[in-house]
Length: 95
Image (cartoon, helix red, strand yellow):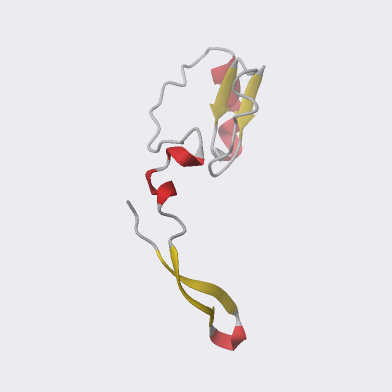
């Protein structure tokens, strides 16, 4: 089974990774993505590119997971323009 991900962001593949023979992240390739995917699946080309980003296996693998969302600075809600509730004020340290 080959899983093809046509997505613009990170997606959790933990349920698929043990059953899939391959997982191909195509991002959003545009009108020629179908031809490019066919070339990869048939072995015409090797999808050996390097990712410019790293996807963690779990959220706990993210260094900032220990300090996010931070500590609440007040018990008052932050109200923006037009009375829009923006939530609470937090102090976040990005480790």
